[in-house]
Image: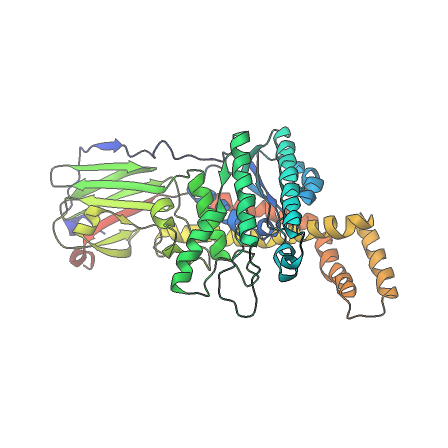
Length: 469
């Protein structure tokens, strides 16, 4: 917009005040250069919650380059992590390890109808939980001995209450997971470690969801593995527990014909103009808004993520009554009344802002990165769970094993034959491309931290009738 169209007055003197600094409780948990290893079972391997955390950190703290490493393997219990933690997690020399185990240790088979019929079942469950506790503490001790900082996480829920007519839920397993979570929280207190409680928040959200829709759940049809919404609730809880900064930026403007006052946080303001009919200024934000991944938007009705963790606050007081158009870089974004602007509006989730569109480009790069990460975890899982027990280490040995096993296997419908085909058709090509995949991931990580660099934007808040001139 032209300044003449608004009869804007160049403000030769105005107070540019730095205030509204983030509350002292807010913090960056991970710092520039940190390697953060997420260690666990299939829920960690699938990665949704720590993918969203990586996305949050890359957009909220774009100048703090961190690397998040997936060290999850499906089906793992504490005993499995004890066996592989050095070769599959600590080998990366992480600054942080984030540990989550328990879903497989609290075994589903211990809560079936046949299990309840056994007179020894209470003793069996007690022994199961004792094994979990002993192994878990050994893992914690070993991780702390590595000098890595450690964050504990409780198990997630097993949804016994969702209405799934095709799948009967076992009763009591979720209580077992709660007990495991209590142990994790007690151990965290004993070792003075941070702990993120997923079980309780997921139960609270689940109850509220199912009051509205009995088939709603934060986990998929197996009642165990979180949906994208479930992973998002986990990420929300992690960020809240670790006191992540809630603000993308905060800009408060008081405009009148004599003076314009701007109070800002996490942004630089320059070239400001204003009167009681509108304001304009250039702003360089230090963060980007969070780009919402696909499949999670419905859960925003149940967790206040936008309010508590994604505030891009714009407040303008002193405007005359009327409807005003917010323009960014000359693009009309939204219309607000003077009263709404005086109260403050959150523009973080508006899809058409240049900032949100830039954040979406960051998300797109992450999505390619996560696809490649899944390949890497498939390869590592196959090597640890299937090849290592056979003493197979090289790709040549794998090919020889496949050829011999296929020649001796007569029944091509058997599971063992299908596993051979998986090795042949999926593992071997992925292993052959291993170096190429890692190189592409490294390149994508570099591109993410180029694409996330904030750039200056021109903000204009102008009366609607004048904005259309």
